[in-house]
Length: 179
Image (cartoon, rainbow, N blue to C red; front, side, top):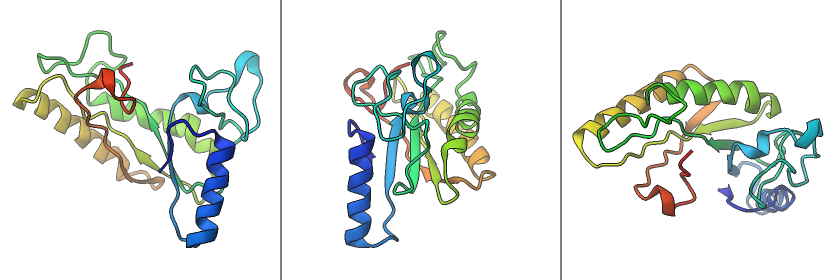
């Protein structure tokens, strides 16, 4: 897996070298937050090999020129529907219930990510399978959320699989930022 702070130009060079060394059949996977897919500031669009000026994080890179051919699979960390201590979604969530996260994420992939993919590219979905408590109420909500992802994913030929994010300590782990 490539990502986590690597500029796109370096990521592409590393992916190219891996494929040269281990063969073209080697799958290269990169995980991003949503910022690299967002157009640049003031309507400018940066080249795919440059950092994205609109990104809040200094390591982000711009993919508005398309996902490089050296990368085979991409995913986007995007969550909405954080489960609170009571087993219910947080009131400040952008989703009315946890099971709607799948629909919101797939809508984003289809409208923003898919147009930037080449025919060979596939995607992993990253369900936010984390909650405030380890109890049956939270487990039921998260299982329902995953079922929603599963139902939508099985109907989408671009989806290769899942990379669930299940981290209890959200504030300490970069994988699953609370949004």
